[in-house]
Image (cartoon, rainbow, N blue to C red; front, top):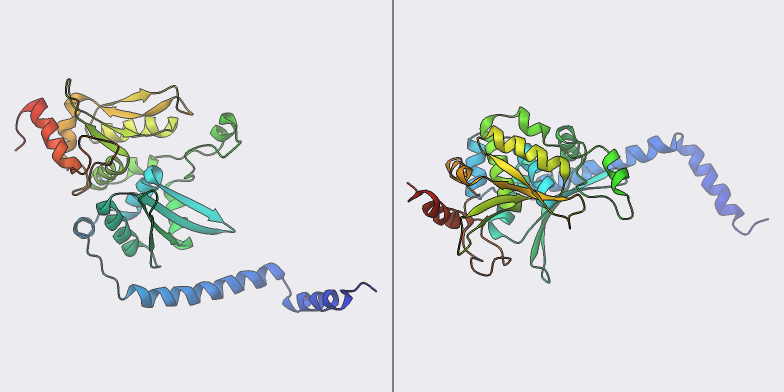
Length: 288
């Protein structure tokens, strides 16, 4: 007889006691999830939403799920593994870190985790939440913004593509907040020593670039596509027309407190809205 005959026979008997093995493991996962949920409910009782912008958003009844999808399509990711979903958000900005954490604290059944990659200086805010993820998949079917490793461009583009259709169907206030968040995470305001100020949104995805143009247009902001040969898809985002920068200010500008990154040697550390004000003064005179 094989040396492991007893273990194999015992395993077969145990399997037969389970009945439907898939059903057994599904029930087991559900029990574990209930235990985890109860533990997180206790942990969340000690946490309060303190970010002023999030408090304002809640009072204005802004759709927070739309904000989360917007962030996932800019500086975030929705990872899947063995039918488990993890929402991850990345930022170097203190304001965006606190803002995102409190958004998840409000919307998720579970307590978000917060860590920092000290080498890169990046905050990582994440939560494993199948309930929330399934809801977000109803707003957007795919959160993969670039091809997989060794995947051809043609094969990737045959897949369902990330989409901003959900932003066309929501109320005006929520749409404007989502636009402001996108520009706060992946947007910029540039102030050349010579020439006119420019503002735009970095986006390396052909479908999303065109759809962002539609969303900006719905908010009264004219934009055009920025092409770049080095991009995997030939585009690098959209840029606001000079006349539309003032309109962006009128709907609120960047999220208050978000600062310019180290990519700008001249303006790093300055709040984006402060530079936006300076740009508007240069373009149109003093801002009221």
